[in-house]
Amino acid sequence: MRTVQVSLGDRSYEICIGPKLLDQLGSACARLQLGQRCAIISDANVAPLYAEAVGLSLTKSGFKPFLITVPAGETAKSLKSVQACYDQLAHRRLERKSFVVALGGGVVGDLAGFVAATYLRGIPFVQVPTTLLAHVDSSVGGKVGVNLKAGKNLVGAFYQPRLVMADLEVFRTLPGREYRAGLAEVIKYGIIYDAALFQRLERDMPKLLKRDPQTLAKVVARCCEIKAEVVGQDETECGLRAILNFGHTIGHALEAISGYGTYLHGEAISIGQVAAARLSAHLLGFSEGEVRRITTLFRGAKLPTKVKLDSRQLAKLLAAMQLDKKVSAGEVKFVLARKIGQVEFGRQVPMHLIETVLKPGH
Ligand code: NAD
Ligand code: GLY
Image 1 (tube, rainbow, N blue to C red):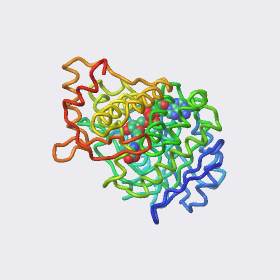
Image 2 (cartoon, helix red, strand yellow; image 1 turned 90 degrees about the vertical axis):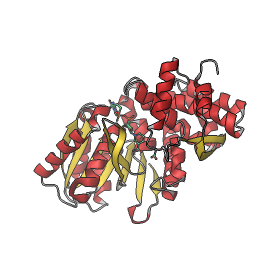
Image 3 (cartoon, rainbow, N blue to C red; image 1 turned 90 degrees about the horizontal axis):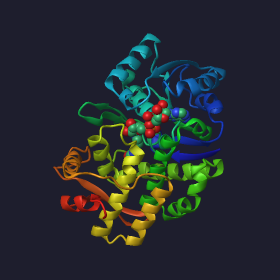
Image 4 (cartoon, rainbow, N blue to C red; image 1 turned 120 degrees about the horizontal axis):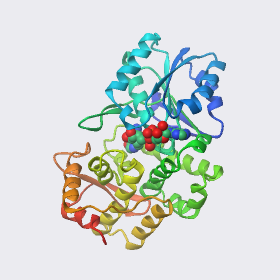
């Protein structure tokens, strides 16, 4: 097992990465001196696969878990689900020291984390991620929340988990498309922070696509280290943490205009990252050779790198970008790359250039 420390003073915690960690969840929770009662929040796909093992592990260590199952998919990240979870926590009389276990992908992690952040003004929670995206991104760093009709993640909090148990064997059941979408976040870490990781991904992508356990262990750990370093310096996204949004401005807008569900998040930010690389070539002297390396790596991960938009859709995309949470004083801010492994945040980009890089044949 590998461990990565997230250093945030009295809110510090460990990310444990390795095989068969679900069995060790109970003993790891016991070390955190949590109360006996706990709610496992999971979704309708994940619960039948892993809730029993998680429950057993907790029970063996003296905890009294019960299961709350929400529907699978983005629609579960709603205030309606939050309310349903609160009702069950109250019914089971969870107390201040009781805790929540988020067992699932980013949807469950964000929802369960928000429930834990707000129930009784905050009870502890533990992340047990089950998608690649959740292993390398959403389970770490404490962004929790739900969606409103008006947009994604509009209600939320920064609330750190007490522990992340990232079992690598859960990938065995993860559908291929979901797994590949997680690779888009993995590649992102290479572009924004670590040229050596990017090179390793260029070399090892075939092994990663085969879900090779050794390669995955190293790569997931490195991504978690990077996220921990960034969050450790800027927990609440006052500055540096924005680099984690590379490719997300265009990606989020694409998700919004195509109706959530057409593109998985990882697919949309794959297109967004290639577009951001092209913008970087126009504005920061990022080399064409590096744009090609980035495009080739996303293609190698079997992810989309471009999108066909007619002029009406393009206008909608540009309008959707103005609604992004990260817009400040009406200005859309981008993360752009100077070279692979080094990016800058808060860069303004003229709208006509965004049109240019999204046009077919660019
Ligand atoms: P998800 O949670 O919807 O999971 C994807 C699908 O895979 C679901 O149908 C789920 O039931 C299924 N699944 C999960 N694990 C499985 C397994 N091991 N075996 C079989 N099926 C499994 O999607 P996701 O991509 O993990 O997360 C996306 C969400 O994460 C979005 O809501 C996004 O906003 C959020 N997110 C949050 C952060 C953050 O920092 N908090 C970062 C990135 C993304
Ligand atoms: N996924 C972006 C962040 O955690 O800040």
